[in-house]
Structures are given as structure tokens and as C-alpha cells.
Length: 380
Image (tube, rainbow, N blue to C red; front, side):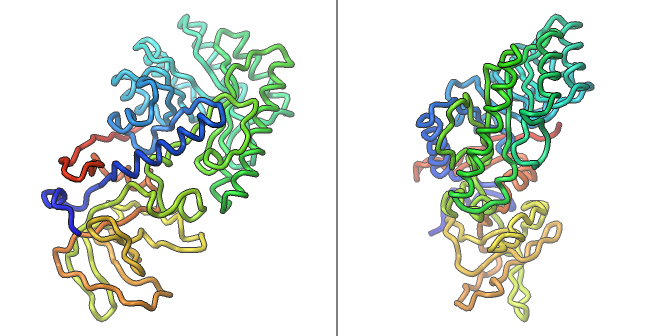
């Protein structure tokens, strides 16, 4: 059944199913409450003030961001407890200080002596004790120190004695994105917990403060069975979910709240192709499911109401053209779509697809309520 509320939208455009989004948010909040930790949602996926209001329990935080542009936009909206979850570079510290002067308690992240010295020096020069977290590595995925690395205590001492505010330790189990299934994610969540708790213990044994012990990736956040010693949990893509998260069994396909509305603009009948107006400029070039058990192409095809159409994916994407065709191994019947038909495409990666658009068109939970429009922003 078609949704008449979508008739006025020009395609391609970005849709949010509010009902699914609210359900996803409640699921992780309930889990954090059960595990006895604070949820610090990551706002990098949505990059929208209106969307942030759904996930911030107290309205003004706590929150995580991945760019200072996000921090600046959210600070202007009154969100004032923010973690900048990317390693700080010295040239950005003036912007960090400006955010503090604007009323935002912005915490920075670091994992080396040079960063710590820069943060401490900026703290002394400004008279503002910049809050800082030390990143911990649990799986060799990206950045961070280990509890056994002497640099952990050195970095902590530079911050604490040098005028900054040592807030604690943080871990991101990014390696969990390469594992499939709850059992695997639960195991990695425990490895993440052990790594960050050991680092916190090492700092405290050295006489350094460590009030915050933070963990988080979407797979481990949803699968953690025990967070003893942890104070906060972080995740971001769970608000919308996507096909990649479905492929590693963090969610089901009917949990995906984000889609791209597109219009059929032609056919290549001899090839079995349907051409639509959503190319990679609308979907992104992310092919994250290509290495998974099920390759979803550039996205799964749904009807205008959001129901998955069996056997159809976007197999190819040019800049403004998308090619819809049957999966190579699908032998069932597939419908024909006249020119002008509206379809929805579920994305491989919600963050990457959302980044291609300037706004969300939100389909309210109430069937008779009008669409909402939420602005989103980008940049660094």
C-alpha cells in the first residue's frame, strides 16, 4: 500500500521510519539500564539536533561526536556534555577551548605523549582544565594503548599533573564488526571490558584518577552480558541500523529505520534491469556487505510502503543512476515496475548514506500525522 504522505517528495530523498527508530533507541537504553551503566549515544550517524533529542535522556547529554563541527552544532542547540571520540590534534585545541567558553564540557580523546603534552599546555595557558580520556586498545583494530604499556601511566601523569582533567579510559571494540552472531559479540564485549577495566586499575594503582570507564561499539553494546567496572556505554548506528548490522546479526532487516526513496526512470528489459534515480550520490559508494555471507549490492529494494521485495537489490550505482535487478541466486518471480513507480532502498551503511543528504523526511508513528523534516549537517 502506498503512503500518500510521500507523494509530494522529490526523489531521491532520505526517509526515517520514526516507529522503528524509537524501538531501536528503547532497546539499547533498556540494555544500558539493565547493565547498570550510563548510555552516551554517538550522534555521528544522525548529525541532527531533532534526532538527538530522541536519544539524549536528559536533553543536554551525555553525547558522543566524531567531529568538532558536530560538537559546535550540538552545543549551539544546548547539548553541553559531549565526548569528541576521535584522537585530538593540537591544531584543534583552540576550537575545543571555544566550546568550553560557550558552555560545553567537551572531553577529548588521546593515546600518546605528544597529544597529552599539547592538551596539558593548552589547559595551563587558557586556565581551562580540558577533560581528556585515554584510548585503550582491546583488539588491535585501530588506536589506543594497553594496560601493560608504560605509556599509559606516562600519558595519565602528564594530563593529571600538567593542568588537564584526566577523566578516565575509553575503548572501542571496532574488531567486532568483523564477527558474526551474538555469541561472538558477547565474547568480544568481555575482551573489551577486561582491557578497559585493567587500564583503569593500572591508573588508579599509580595514584591517578579514573572516574569514567567507557566502552562501546554497536555489536558489543547489544551483546555485552556483564559490564562490571564500566561506567558508560557508547553506540551510534543503532538508532537507524543498516544492512551491514543485519549481516553480522546485531539486528533484523525490519529494524532498519533509514531508507532512500527513489523513482523508476527506465528499463533495460533484455538485461532484466530497472533504472532508478538513486545512484551512489544518494546511496553512497559503501559496499560493506560485499564481504559478508549475503552481498546486498548497493541496497535492498522495498516497495513504497517499506516492505522488502524478495529477490531484488541495487546491483549497480552510477552517480545519479541506480540499477535494480534480481539477485544472482534468486529464482522466484519479481515484479515489473512502470516508469514513475516509487521504491525504497535500504542502505548498507546508515552513516555513509545519510551523509549524502541534507535532511531527513520522517514518517511519524501515527499513520495520519504529517511528515516531519529534520535538517542534518556535515563537515569537520
